[in-house]
Image (cartoon, rainbow, N blue to C red):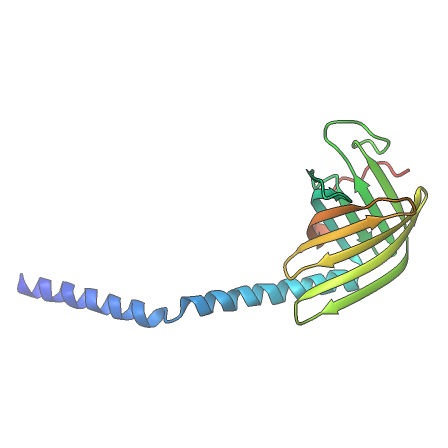
Length: 180
């Protein structure tokens, strides 16, 4: 009986010692993992932007007054594929000219200016898109994760901001409506 108690005490003591030495600084390892994830996402974002092949799937839209609407990311997006851009807003609750309750503008990218901030792991992108229904300016801000915003302005007064995730075009689940 004494031998069993001694073995149990030794086993417990060795577990305590291993637990203390195996995880000396858990905050540092979490921080290192987070930094590695940020670096990986930064490189993915850089690749998507340089290849001009991405989609901002918006889950929120903001107007110029700051009013926010929660929207479906499958029908509210800004997509860039090489020299073409698609800007779409839609609604699950009504019909629109594009068939998904809103408007789809597809056109040629006429201006592209990409600025990288490696220290903050972010990007700013400004593009102009010429479509059949108008000329639009889009200003993207892409943060250290895959979150992004795109402010849309046109020739008429007003602004619409798309907020959501930036993902590769091939991994996107968006549904493109009828272009005008």
